[in-house]
Image (cartoon, rainbow, N blue to C red):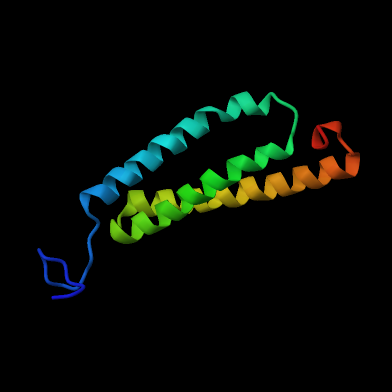
Length: 110
């Protein structure tokens, strides 16, 4: 019975309670990070802003995987939104970094 879900026998592998808890924790951290955006928006641009991209991309990946295990409009919608958010954030960071380098902004060297 390898690879089969114990309840259905359909071959589908479900997500266990630990997986649900870990995704819930990821949602919590994503929401916390989202509440901090307004604070960082008031600061000058530093290369350390790239640190936002890593947890955002990780949550995007977690959302995509979770949507595979728990398909539905909410989980699939979250995955699509997170792909858009991650892509937009990384593109903005790239453009902003190139602009900062071109302007030789002092925040890049401090």
